[in-house]
Length: 219
Length: 213
Image 1: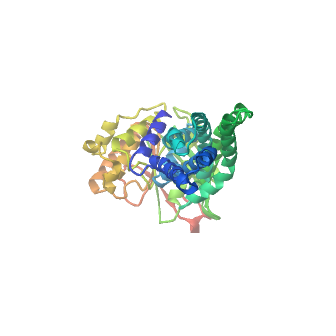
Image 2: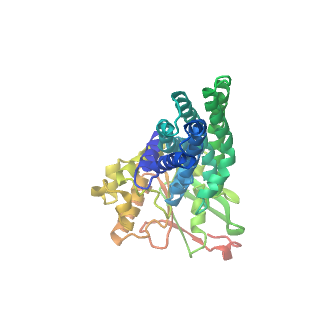
Image 3: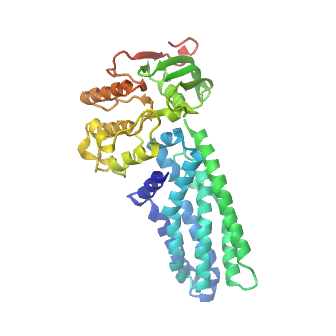
């Protein structure tokens, strides 16, 4: 499975791979918010965590439709489906590679973009930590959507629409954990642990659903 | 080892493409699937590879060195598309498939360099796959069959886009595979140059009522 992981990461950083598209989109969205909202520093620091999370969520959805479509177009998907290796495991590894290539850069860029939003160090740290715990869940959910839309020539937007409702809980608990970290009375741990639980839940459900959808999509 | 298909039927959409196709192939034998366009050659091969569900019937591998649950696991499938990434170099592609496939019991794949040399393209491993011509891409896809051992080769129009010399080269590869105790099933219009290969004529939807041997 390591060769598949390495190949997918390598592909995503080659020309046309799209690893940087997500993080560039994330930067664009967050960078224009202060211009739109105006120079109200208190307001910016209050909405900062939510803006970062929304930007990261949308950026994470951006490249998902190519997860299996690129494999299908050149015929590799047929060969992946035929192997003795359980398809669920193959899908899980592809999800991990996709997250390392597109999700991890978002987490790394988040502290820098937090400065744009006048967030203090606690808020920046909490946002980065929750993004680290939450973005894999978006990839796992997205894998199921990408597998369903694999045979559609322009499935990109459809994948986002299919996936978004399921990704809402991730957004809610991610942002509420950050707020809990900033504001004293609310405890940080419960929403954060729920976020981690959602992540683990979708790490199982997502690849199983995606594998089932891929088996059915073969023509 | 024997590949046994019994009473296979398959559908595309609502239409039955073929019905009750049965055959047995022993180790070292090749089966050439022939028939007009749209007669169900590719569909049959995809059913054998496990990529399409059969409406009825089974295809199994009997007495194999490496027993498999599904026939597809013991197969190499060379379809219309080459299953190589344009952005990666030829070497990266082949190294990936060699590692990802792994060898089944009963045989061993050859090295990436040797496989590229066997298809006559030893010197261009460093090029991105997308830079190669259509015929060279096809030959590199054939090299994929050599880097990992699978007893059954399922070949769909393998020699499309190949020149005469490459066709002879490919016939040599298949003959060599059969000599090692492998099985080959190929759908093709052109003669593959295989000695003693058996033929299966697909008659398509019109003939779905009759036996197809």
